[in-house]
Length: 606
Ligand code: G6P
Image: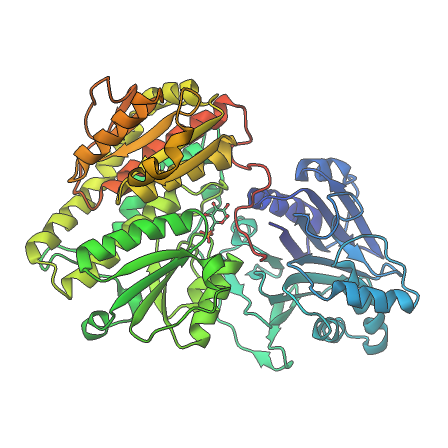
């Protein structure tokens, strides 16, 4: 999604702006632009990559105040003209904007009736003209931005500069993140800490409705009614090195390979060997409260939703509380019944996904108790929830989620253990799960060592027009996530079905053209799964089995054999070979692995 960077200080802004935009590339975009102020505004914008923008910026592009943007088109096609920044007619004001202005057409018509000539098709240009007209009357950029935003319906994160105020950037947030970075006599702002960590670790997250005025020597923040707000800076522990590929060919492979560590970090300090329980201090709930829930409802989008399905399964099995997962994007629109004895859990790697945030806000409005399972410390969803579990998986850069997925599933195992042990889960079962969790990092290493075999299989199957993924009960969310990984990064069509449902419809698709990846753990459903494999093979379908043993060649063409853990925890491990499979299929098909077409890492619009 769109990215914003801004700088004010003693140095030239352009190097930071360009490097910052490069750090935001992973979020997905189609055009980019920068503007600096030095006796008037100097602007460059291009359709294409940040590298193209850097090439278009002249060597003498001086100015110690500037803003930049990567655009992900919503209003108007990707083009040089539609790229941000957008200027007021007199070129005094420049604006970059993330989000969507819903009443842009109406505001545009009014401005056009007043004689304003628009140059782009964007909703954002409305803002540059509104601010440009008001700043002349108020002679205060802060006031002009505030007044313009009062007329706007929709979501925004914006950064604005005024050629006549060379020492000041105004930023504001409503639904799209803005983070301030505090430097030594310089201030930064960005839509994502990824752009800031090379320059400062001291950050301040703006809340919805807040506006901030940044100058080289500090910042002031204001609520929507112009009252000044007090903000405590937060120290981020993510380092610049986390955003490098670290010698790997792609971020995705790096992040897959990090999983022994990231899972260990999610577990660190949270397992208690005396009582065989999980310590989750961030839940902000005592044992009595933890016992009081009669239902758990999990929400998230994309891979976060599928990890929530694994989570629901873990909670039902270990805590014996009815639990289910639903896409947050659906949940928020269907006027959900919010019950006082239901525990709501929102999942988000970025902590910024708009649909998930809106669902959490809806739940809070209706008095729901919401926990967050979130990777990004201090993110909007984390701030909005009543408590939660941080993943500590480090920044995830590749669009397709891998390490955040497994860490979320591990966080659910901890939550399920906690909810189980304050109910009826026995100490012996608690101990079994604790020990199983401790084995995960080592077993993930064993699975990563299978990469050469999985790579060969990926090459073999990558050219199939379509693939089926099946799993039963615990294996079903694994199959869904496996299909999701394959389609999002390799663009091979993939469907996931419960293995039990195959003969109620999709079996009609099975034949030599449609291979099946079958999730077959060594659990109480093994025989049922093997029967399904026989049914597929009988229709001429190829089978790649992912399980704990080698199957009879009559049942599977290929087998990936994984280390065995406790049955409840097996889904966490079984998702990893499918990540490796999707990665190598995408490489074999020469896809843009880390930035798949049409997708964005963090979807901050509806
Ligand atoms: C986007 C990404 C997915 C991700 C989903 C939820 O659609 O492409 O990979 O799973 O958002 O993101 P979140 O940051 O909320 O986990």
